[in-house]
Length: 160
Image (cartoon, rainbow, N blue to C red; front, side, top):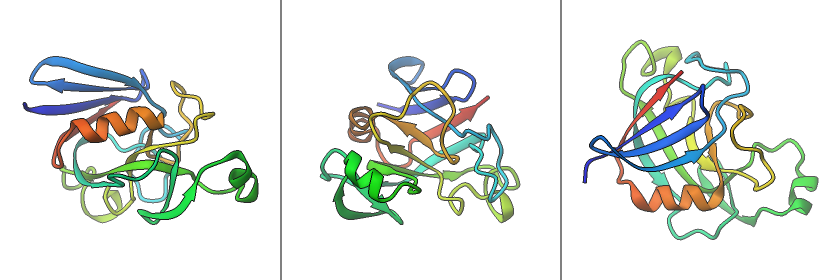
């Protein structure tokens, strides 16, 4: 199988293709600040990327990650109340790396150095509307399914 992913910022969807056949489509949430590539912008970067690393294999649903490391915590509403300002990265991480020098790779436009991921989020987060800090947020069960489906190095095109 030859998988690729397309993330549509305007439709707030992530679609998995095998060649030209749609395998699966998910509702997602991209950046509240819209599209953009600049470091510190909290925007979702456009263009061609690839999955550089898959993080969290075998972790429980709702496992909390900080700095790409599982903290040992499991997300709950009580934990959210205790840490109200955390950007919740849960369950699995697909760390993206840009493929287009000067657009989403190197310098002040580097997707990987901006720590842009496809990741799980709290179940109460609404999908289908932009609300992230630049990443692509998914339902936890969906990100587990995607994580298990696609290999490392899968191409990810992010379009407006």
